[in-house]
Each structure stands twice: as structure tokens, then as C-alpha cells.
Amino acid sequence: QVQLVESGGGLVQAGGSLRLSCTASGRTFRLYGMGWFRQAPGKEREFVSAISGIGIRTDYADSARGRFAISRDNAKNTVYLQMDSLSPEDTGVYYCAQARGDWHTRTPLLVHEYEYWGQGTQVTVSS
Image (cartoon, rainbow, N blue to C red; front, side, top):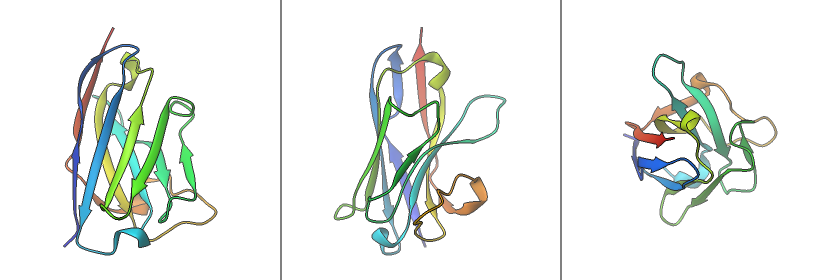
């Protein structure tokens, strides 16, 4: 059974930084793309960033590009999301997710393209 456990959320002032972590267990980590999504109150879950199995390919939502950085350490079965220059619009629950396989050309952007999800970690950015 695959399990994903996120950590690193919290309360931060606008302009600050947070680093989210997600540790996976249950199957060979490097074989699967990983993604980060977020969900603000009253809104649908939205794509933030994704990384391919061995980390060669990364992609970001327009709102995250230039401020966030996704990375992974396959020796630790962990994916990270470094978030800088945070704004109140970044507030929400952040979820890591494991894709149904690896990806090579087209970024998996949609919720249904991910098979397993973590429980989420709250990020709150105050103005």
C-alpha cells in the first residue's frame, strides 16, 4: 500500500518562504512522477508543480513559476517543494501526489492522473 506523508506547512508572512516535504513508501519511488497540488477554501484542487521519476523534467503552474522549486531525492523517497516570495494567494492545503507512472513529454496536470495522495499540509500566508 502506497503512503504519502507531507510535512513543512505552517503560518508565514507575505514574502516569506516554506519548504514542503513528502515522503513516500510502498513502491519503487523513482519509477513514478510526483506532483504538488493545492486547494484553497471553496476552490477546486489545482496543479502547482510536477517532477518526473528521476527528476530530469519539472513543470510549474504559471502562479508558481519563478517562485517555487520542486525537487526529489530518490534515495530518501522524498519530494520537496521550496516556496519563496509567498503571498496570501498561496494559502491553502498542499497535497503531494504520486502519478500512475513516469512522464516524459506531457506533464500530468490533472487530479485523475495521480493515483495516490497525501493527507495534505496547511499553508497560511498572512498579509
